[in-house]
Length: 95
Image (cartoon, rainbow, N blue to C red; front, side, top):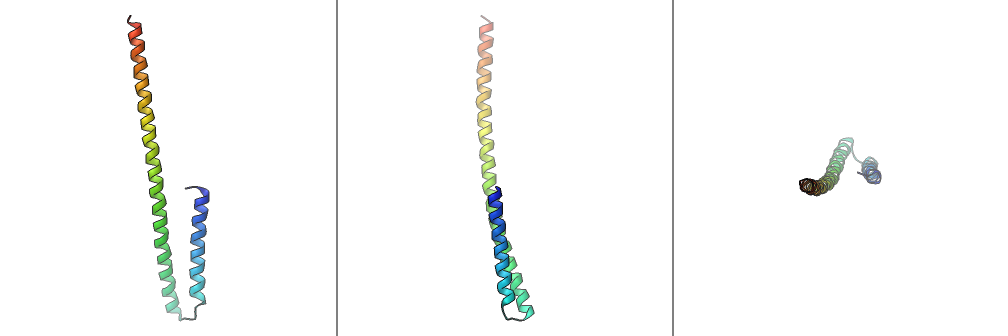
């Protein structure tokens, strides 16, 4: 994950948490009700973050798998070239 993405994600989390906390703490309600609201907000933000992080991880996995496939393809191409050159050298040496 790039530094910019990480910073944006951290900013999102901090903003969401600060907004939720400020809204709940400034509301004129009893302590028990306020604590329950805080718990619900924390749970919701946590679930949202889990989803966002899961999406980023899936995207990263896809990129890594694509790179692996490209490396395998290039390796196979080089292997074939080496085999052809070795055969050509062996055939030329035998004549």
